[in-house]
Length: 216
Image 1 (spheres, rainbow, N blue to C red):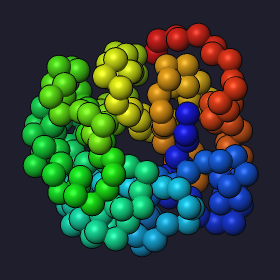
Image 2: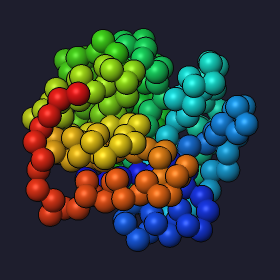
Image 3: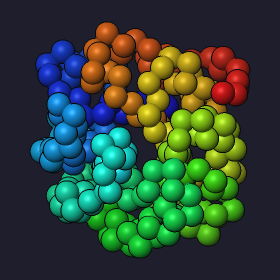
């Protein structure tokens, strides 16, 4: 499993990412001193994925504006491991409808697009969308995500499509994702507290032994 660190900066954090093989989860916006602000679309690590920023708008209590994402997509999409298609956090099928309006544009600019699945959605809702270049991003509310991640993993592997889980910030959750065969996960823990990097080392080890597919 690959682990993506949200917007890593600083020499210590970047050194830890390189040492452990972590990748960058780049976002065109950030929250600073409680305010949502634009962020440079440059990346600090060679391997990165591009987020759309919907989660930070949600945290800030604002309606998402994907203008910065659109600009980042133009310059960074081609080199990204994957790009998260715009969505509505915990928005169910309304989120999927939004993602569908962006999907073609994203696919024109990146090799792999991930469609977020949100609260209330089931695999059948995206069965006609996923494929070799369209994978799944498991988002949604905390409770829904961890109650449904096993189902989404089974579906993704049955279909042979890429699956990523967002906001994975603990040793237990990263182990669960690795046990389920999730291809990648992201989190902000390492970028905020460098000492937490060790939580995710075992999960990215290709030789690790499964610890049991426990449920949330």
